[in-house]
Image (cartoon, rainbow, N blue to C red):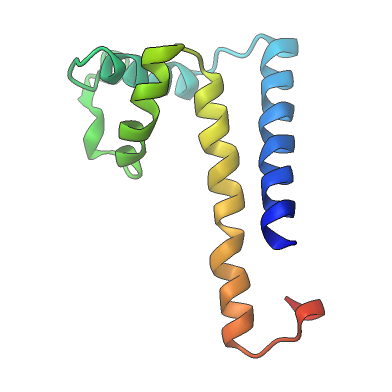
Length: 110
Protein backbone atom coordinates (compact mmCIF):
# COMPACT_ATOMS: atom_id res chain seq x y z
CA UNK A 1 0.00 0.00 0.00
CA UNK A 2 2.89 2.36 0.82
CA UNK A 3 4.34 1.96 -2.68
CA UNK A 4 1.01 2.62 -4.35
CA UNK A 5 0.44 5.79 -2.34
CA UNK A 6 4.00 6.92 -3.13
CA UNK A 7 3.49 6.38 -6.86
CA UNK A 8 0.17 8.24 -6.80
CA UNK A 9 1.73 11.15 -4.94
CA UNK A 10 4.60 11.37 -7.44
CA UNK A 11 2.04 11.53 -10.24
CA UNK A 12 0.00 14.14 -8.39
CA UNK A 13 2.98 16.37 -7.58
CA UNK A 14 4.33 16.08 -11.12
CA UNK A 15 0.94 16.97 -12.58
CA UNK A 16 0.44 19.93 -10.26
CA UNK A 17 3.88 21.34 -11.02
CA UNK A 18 3.37 20.90 -14.77
CA UNK A 19 -0.02 22.59 -14.51
CA UNK A 20 1.47 25.45 -12.53
CA UNK A 21 4.21 25.85 -15.13
CA UNK A 22 1.68 25.87 -17.98
CA UNK A 23 -0.71 28.32 -16.35
CA UNK A 24 1.85 30.76 -15.00
CA UNK A 25 4.41 30.39 -17.82
CA UNK A 26 7.14 30.01 -15.23
CA UNK A 27 10.65 30.83 -16.36
CA UNK A 28 12.39 31.13 -13.03
CA UNK A 29 16.12 31.71 -12.63
CA UNK A 30 16.80 28.32 -11.06
CA UNK A 31 14.64 26.52 -13.61
CA UNK A 32 16.64 28.14 -16.41
CA UNK A 33 19.93 27.07 -14.87
CA UNK A 34 18.88 23.46 -14.42
CA UNK A 35 17.21 23.30 -17.83
CA UNK A 36 20.39 24.55 -19.48
CA UNK A 37 22.61 22.08 -17.62
CA UNK A 38 20.32 19.13 -18.38
CA UNK A 39 20.19 20.05 -22.06
CA UNK A 40 23.97 20.46 -22.27
CA UNK A 41 24.55 17.07 -20.67
CA UNK A 42 22.04 15.46 -23.04
CA UNK A 43 24.08 16.80 -25.97
CA UNK A 44 27.36 15.51 -24.54
CA UNK A 45 28.55 18.99 -23.63
CA UNK A 46 30.21 20.16 -20.45
CA UNK A 47 27.60 20.88 -17.75
CA UNK A 48 28.62 24.50 -17.31
CA UNK A 49 25.96 27.10 -16.56
CA UNK A 50 26.48 30.26 -18.56
CA UNK A 51 24.05 32.00 -16.21
CA UNK A 52 26.29 31.33 -13.22
CA UNK A 53 29.60 30.83 -14.98
CA UNK A 54 30.18 27.67 -12.96
CA UNK A 55 30.64 23.97 -13.66
CA UNK A 56 27.45 22.38 -12.36
CA UNK A 57 28.90 19.14 -11.01
CA UNK A 58 30.14 21.01 -7.95
CA UNK A 59 26.52 21.61 -6.94
CA UNK A 60 24.81 19.40 -4.37
CA UNK A 61 22.73 16.62 -5.90
CA UNK A 62 24.17 17.31 -9.34
CA UNK A 63 24.79 13.60 -9.97
CA UNK A 64 21.05 13.31 -10.62
CA UNK A 65 21.60 15.07 -13.94
CA UNK A 66 23.22 11.90 -15.25
CA UNK A 67 19.78 10.28 -14.93
CA UNK A 68 17.96 13.26 -16.49
CA UNK A 69 20.28 13.68 -19.49
CA UNK A 70 19.03 10.61 -21.45
CA UNK A 71 15.44 11.77 -21.00
CA UNK A 72 16.41 15.24 -22.21
CA UNK A 73 18.07 13.67 -25.23
CA UNK A 74 14.76 11.98 -26.14
CA UNK A 75 12.51 14.97 -25.39
CA UNK A 76 14.08 18.15 -23.99
CA UNK A 77 11.56 19.53 -21.52
CA UNK A 78 11.57 21.02 -18.06
CA UNK A 79 8.90 18.45 -17.18
CA UNK A 80 11.70 15.96 -16.53
CA UNK A 81 12.98 18.33 -13.86
CA UNK A 82 9.49 18.47 -12.37
CA UNK A 83 9.43 14.66 -12.25
CA UNK A 84 12.73 14.50 -10.39
CA UNK A 85 11.45 17.13 -7.97
CA UNK A 86 8.34 15.03 -7.27
CA UNK A 87 10.43 11.89 -6.86
CA UNK A 88 12.76 13.68 -4.46
CA UNK A 89 9.86 14.79 -2.29
CA UNK A 90 8.39 11.30 -2.12
CA UNK A 91 11.73 9.55 -1.66
CA UNK A 92 12.19 11.62 1.49
CA UNK A 93 9.27 9.75 3.06
CA UNK A 94 10.85 6.31 2.66
CA UNK A 95 13.73 6.77 5.14
CA UNK A 96 11.30 8.37 7.59
CA UNK A 97 8.97 5.38 7.28
CA UNK A 98 11.88 2.99 7.90
CA UNK A 99 12.93 5.00 10.95
CA UNK A 100 9.39 4.58 12.28
CA UNK A 101 9.62 0.83 11.77
CA UNK A 102 13.03 0.76 13.44
CA UNK A 103 11.69 2.76 16.38
CA UNK A 104 8.96 0.18 16.86
CA UNK A 105 6.03 2.41 15.96
CA UNK A 106 2.76 0.70 15.14
CA UNK A 107 1.58 0.94 11.50
CA UNK A 108 -0.94 3.69 12.32
CA UNK A 109 1.76 5.76 14.03
CA UNK A 110 4.23 5.66 11.10
